[in-house]
Length: 450
Image (tube, rainbow, N blue to C red; front, side, top):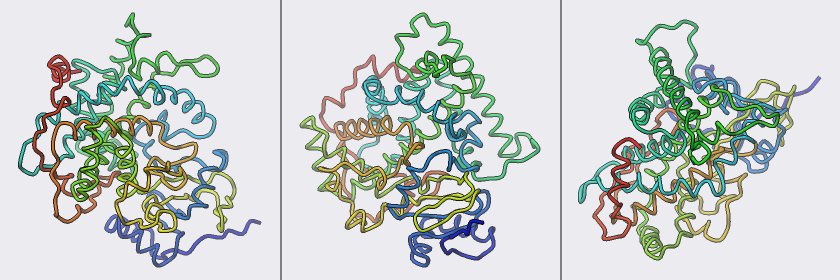
């Protein structure tokens, strides 16, 4: 009989531990780290019993563990994104879908989307107020939403407008419901789940129209949007993606890539305004047409202000030997991204915002993990990185971002993502720059539903 070996942890009832996690979402992990060490066991509602780890060797071992032994946690975003979402799939099903979806999100395909990102950013920044404080988070949310609707959904016209208006409500509601019990009875639209299901039905109807339009498009082969690529892709046995495969994948990309990317960009503004020497270097680099410091800065923003705190697995084998621990079947293993990114042994002077640490060294993908890791690493990571690079380049080319001596913005939970409490406030002045003169036809296309 296997003898399990679990790290220590709080003994309070599950409900009490859950309340503590909600009340102290940021400080709580640090406090338990200080009390119990770099691994501890928690028991919280919905998620159940979990071992929380943050030691690099154990994180790497978890990410390299076979998906036959560990899978996606039972309580994850798949509960709201659908059974065909990558979040909900395990084993061979997950491997097949991931292999099919990898090409559209990488390589030369990304270059086709840069123009869309620049257009949407330029249109939004052109409307920014000058000389007075404002929160950049709403702008970032609009940019990333429009980019996904155009580049991923291939939406335009009525479908674009409806998705743009409806989906933010659904994503916000879904992110909150993802960690709530699923009711066995539909209480109608007066209940949160009822409202979410109604929004999901509207979404499904729009996706059906987009699929029908794409199927009837004689130039489908010439389209770059990811919906068109998915409709033409085939699994190893020659079968196409089903309608449910496509619908759940599209909403997964929207949920995973919209708010998280926007939040990271709001944090980028917050960080740069408090580090004027980095900001000045970035402006010089933009004017010179280079990108090395910008790429390093994005990596450092994601290290110091990771918008998702945990990435997890659930033990599917009878037991899992994980470093010092032997974890029983059914337990979850959560990696605390924040504790790993704050580890002085991994990132010396970890509390400092210092992009230079990535200037001449690529991050270790078992230590720098804002996109997760292993076979479940975010499939849209390269897309999101490209998007953030272009957004920051366009902003710094169009406006002067004024530094500030104000205190750092606090962390604020938005359900899944952790955002700057004041929305990444900025004060800007217009720059005279080629990037500030988006062509009229391009601007018009974004304003009329492209």
